[in-house]
Amino acid sequence: MSELVTGEAVALELQPARLPSRALAVLLDLVLVLVAYVVVSVVLLLATASLDEAAQMAVSIATFLLVLVGGPIAVEALSHGRSLGKMACGLRVVRDDGGPIRFRHALVRGALGVVEILLTFGVVACIASLVSARGRRLGDVFAGTLVVRERVPVARGGFLPPPPPWLAGRFQELDLSAVPDGLWLAIRQYLGRMNQLDPQVGWAMAGRLAGELAQRTGVPVPPGVPPAVYLAAVVQERQVREARRTFGLGSGAPVAGGMAVGAAGAFAPPSPYGTPPPPAISTPYEPSAPYGPAAAGSPSAGDEPSVAGEGADGARGEGRRTGFVPPA
Image (cartoon, rainbow, N blue to C red; front, side, top):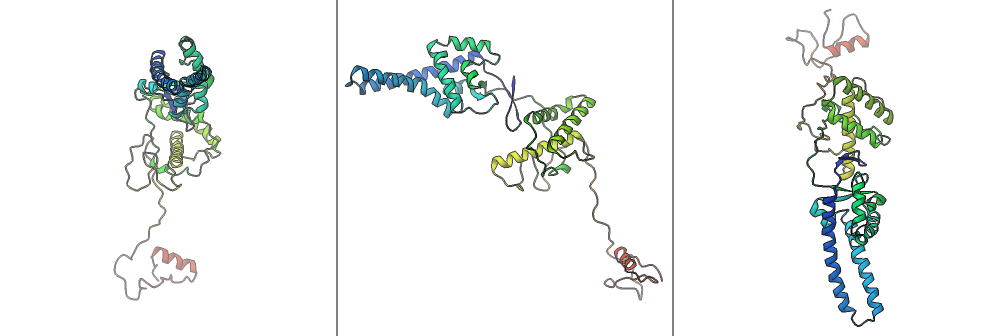
């Protein structure tokens, strides 16, 4: 299994294609290309029957180059590495970083494929694939590509737990542009396997990753927030930003799918990080009415209570706030 890291810091456990599956895909592609070449050659031969021998030879060479060489290059570039043979075998050509290939990758692979596959009947390609650790032929080495299997079993990686709800949206202003992809990968791998680690080892690893992440962002870890909780919250914030940028959502739009909760009462899975701290009470208690009936001569609900013997505004202010009037 070969782990590749994308630009979104997603670890791709891609399985390189082996020689038998690659040979079968190439054989299918060659059969289709040869059939197309024969059909095009017959049509052009009938169309150029009135031309001289030199012109017919030039048309034959052009047909060879366009169909047998340019055809596979065009199909591979337009399909992003999925020719008909590779689609039938469940294979795909990707870059070394796991991204889709472009025209220059297909051009290099196709040009060297003429020598490796057509002129040497696949002998050079087979030897290079057997020698390479990831089964790459010379065209893949020079183009920086890799043939991988698409139909593989579901990855057995650990579940990435969401952060506690009380940290939702707390790191919206955090600058994540200086965090490298390698650090994101290490954080994701730790969060996915933290329940399988020894508690002391996991705590030390979380502290080290949290310290490095705080150093990259320039903002220290908030006090009272465990390192694992801090890492999960920052990773969630990055996922929310990537989703908004991908789908063209605004900065305030909620993102579903376990990354952000925008509506009250939405379902939230139990957090593996422990019980959140109790929320602080910001509204002081104010009694709505005095206890018991109002005595004769006492101020009504709309009057300002006063304190006997005190004329300062502060004393009257205390009486208004508490609703208690000391006896005269």
